[in-house]
Image (cartoon, rainbow, N blue to C red; front, side, top):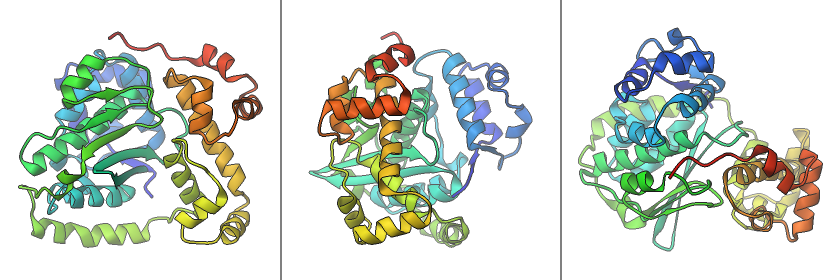
Length: 335
């Protein structure tokens, strides 16, 4: 999985066209502009997030991420987006996008369908801190833009769920044209599952046939994730009130609980250690970004009692959830 992120000069040019003082943002982030030169320029994951946090702090209007995403052109981004936009239909496009993003960078996309809905989530490997809100907005807006460009018609999600306090609601509703749910356990873009079968007007089998072999080769040659990373990714997706037993997770990974524990032990870790890490990461994100109370967060993390969560959190952070929130809470952007 790539430890670098494509970030060519065209992205900086797009930001400048939106009124962003790019040089000021780069200076604030401590990144040289020369790191972005060329159509194949890449930056490290650390530089990528430093840039987005700087952009969020100094980029101006709260809707900047939405405006970046709606102006995104898949043809100008990366090979995963290029393979997606030339796919047969939206479902195929999302599948290719999710599969080949692992080659391009450490971003993971997942699409789960149930009860007539397609729920799209994303996360970043080895990034424990809360994602910049502007990056979340850009990602979802660019995915909606890709879908609309492929289908050749506007795409209106069923809803957008955001793990943040209520803020900038008007701009979000205007950008996506659907209800926006705040204080959600995870960020996700929810589409009508029927859209997945919609054919793409941009489909081009020749382009896909040219791209896929090299992408598959790169995927095979890339460093495979360890089983510990697979467990971590699965648990991150399930911090929504599900039961997190080792038996449940091992079944999802098509192996026995004993085999899973043994293989994790060979890596110097255990299921409980990974679960604690993921719970700690999720608790910090939800306490910092949402107005969910400690009881609600305890439920989402799979704790049976609030006291159990509170004791665990004190062990992790040296403070109760309420005291930690008082110290680290983000102030919401103006409505």
